[in-house]
Length: 248
Image 1 (tube, rainbow, N blue to C red):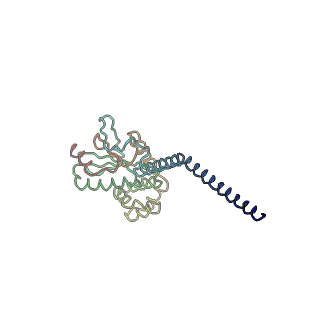
Image 2: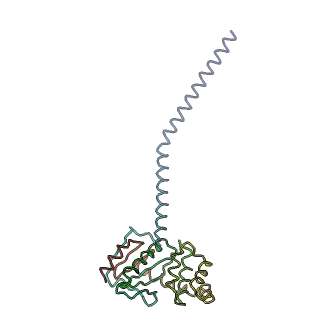
């Protein structure tokens, strides 16, 4: 009898344990089902965060100070709205069609714009005049300011455009040491160049260009003014060609 009672006890214990396991599995299943809406909500929030990060990356890649409503490339303005001081701009060429560029030496899109400018010089050199203005985006390009000042220091020795081109051709190497090395490579008088750059003698000139650009509605680089038309970003050669042919 004692053996039968023990057997019944263990049998009852086993059945109760199985019931507990079944109940626990049921509760886990209920919990998982209840969590489904929260999981989808979390996933949705993660996707939105990723989207915001991607948009931030795009703004940086487009070298913008302030995000624009859309990637507008061409904006025609009445003549009275575009008044640029060309006396302190760097001039290249003597053509009828003025192309004013606000640019950042560290901006990858400005470098692409520079490559397009070289094509324009080659094909329409007699029709255009390029005017350069500094627009360093210091918030996202920490080396752009000094690169602009260095080019202005090179201008004192009559080699602005040589230095300008060299900066874009070596855009990934814009440290102070490299800026002074470029002065040697281009045959500049180093003591004069070094004093100019170290003392920040051209900081105000760069700042004045930036202030003027902002007053004209420039928000990022490169920004071009061709006659009364504004072109924003590294646009295709055909975009510039159309404006040049229309205005020459």
